[in-house]
Length: 624
Image (cartoon, rainbow, N blue to C red):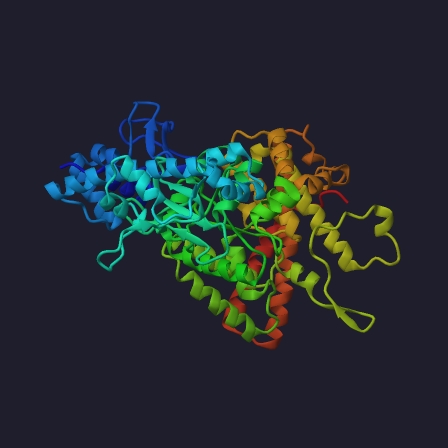
């Protein structure tokens, strides 16, 4: 049985290569690839790699190589048609039957690619002709240079009813082919001639993963409606499965490490011209499941970028809730918000590419976004309010089909609701305090600089301020130690990953350190520091890697041996955890005074066990 290239492309898009292979091989993600023991020969050291982005597996030991279809054939002894039918069934796709009609459709699709290529060449030529002056002025006015216009093959559809139609007829293209490609419209009224779909618009060709043109997007130059117009659904084009700029983003992701989802064509193009080529955009619709799966083949953690206004927050909520059902271990989303009134294009033109990088550096993971959307970023102060929040978060978590991911979301939300600090101390710091008879909120936008010893001894100091500085210092020590000794990451990463630091910026640094080391295990101390400074942490690293930290933790210095660094890290972590558990016990005791429930009593018992365990460890103070 013969299968069309388009059907096989769609099949590969819908199935996850790592998921298929992961049923038979225990895979561990390392950077952009998964590694495991080869299922086709005996080995003790993993030499089998899976590259989801490129769609193949390869064993450096025995040479086994292929796609998901090849893997099913080799591992289960199936023929090519049998493997295709098996995978298509799992993907919910109907296998096309080999028939004269199907072969005719395949030939027609191949011809349609040629028709779309001819249309693109026509639009490009029109942009460079005298009639294209207005279109060229539009692109130049948006800051695009000639190289960018050429790279994205931008063009112009003249304000003519039949300019494209007549040009294609001269090349031997029939009207039926143009209708099938979505290039012309055939009126329902008999006797009226077909006319061009795109007229008086600047044109953006839309390509598939093989960089074949499958559709167009057009924007009116003169005032009118609709301002934006896309090709209709055709045999080549299904807009819910396509992302604008995907081929460039694949290359960009290899250079920049991530993919950014923006709103429109010009955002993608402006970012690419500024140097950030890892941007894509959906085609006038909300991001769909197929598009998210396509993003995950490039990077496990794409960033969705939204406007900073109320509409952007609503769009973020819809996207966050939409992805829950398809989450799986190791794959998620981050969310970033632009300054209100800006889109990526205007932000880059106003502040340069660094302004956009700053926005992306502040991106937050899905769980934090859901927490903030539901809680407003604060822990409710009454039991009934906490119960209501917990109920809402549990309802969201139930939408996650993967049991492992679901359990981790439930746990993460519960840890935020039950005041721990990493939780409780933050709540204490952000609780309203009085000054001059008025309520005010303490500033938690970033880590306060550690005060010199002389300042700490002054009469105006309060015990709460001392505790805050001590907690922050210990958090900085943990980060400084792992930056200067990245070899300890594999021992401490789970514990560091379960924490939430006392300031948003310091906590963001913690997350980025872990993410960088998990994606590139070859990073040494200098490389890690250079990367972190390059993505917007230069100022805070000056404090974290400064003498004011090292004077309290000699083991965090780069010249210390790994064993000493690890021992110091463990002691500092134990001190933080002991303080955290103590604070939570105090909070539970307070709540028990209001309402003694079985859940609170059980939580208290668990915490007291943890406190005894931590107290039994060698948790001598690290530094003064």
